[in-house]
Length: 336
Figure: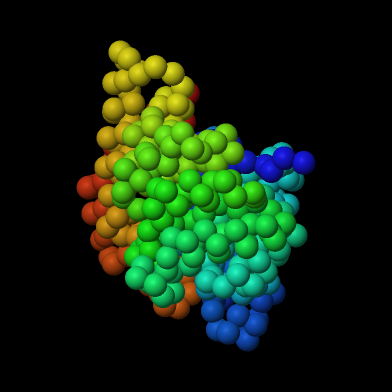
């Protein structure tokens, strides 16, 4: 049986939703160690909203999804709950990746096994970086993914996020080797080195129908997809999905001439400008924007140490600086 490869398109790295402290959740304060309980109904509602808006698929429990703050049971329950909700809403087999944010092979395989049982299609496996770039060799990265992939029940994608792995960057020649491993079907690059994206996306030594290249930044969508990339896994699309989906469709949909080219340029500008909101405000900004734009979730932002949220007046300031253009485009697209 052939290994399932993720479809090209726009994916959303979903934030994890939490219930307020005074909720009637079945999770006691003791069972969550005093932390906010996971809000699976809101998580499911947000997932259905994205599916209805044209988003290709989800990344649950990635970095934005605070996977490292959830217990093993909570992670599995969230994935299975979202899968069940999507099925019931008329989205069977909707693509779901689930994040694996740990450093050891045994625990990585445990996460992947739990996700397979819960209904995820792929595991997005963080490149281990506990010992930093000086000690983590490119050969070691290949060996790590070889051992994980051949034992995983679901296909895996490489997740390179130097910002949370002590600066470890996977090099283009390493991706050529990773792409040749059985059960490794793609990569998410969460860094701004466009050259690496393009080299891997255009590498003639890689079968790009079996190994997808996704950028973690919507501000890179145009250049990355034009030069071999499969799409983006982008936080902005979690609250302004139609604009990012429209840009993706135009970029991959044919020759860029005349009015089509002008529209791609307009939308890429709008998306890139809006992405500055996330650059400035990070995960707190994403959660605030999801709540403000979609009405889903709460402004209690997460679990320690991610406490609090945007300071008073920052939403209004950030919206005026970065989001007014994309709000107008989103409204235009809602009417089409």
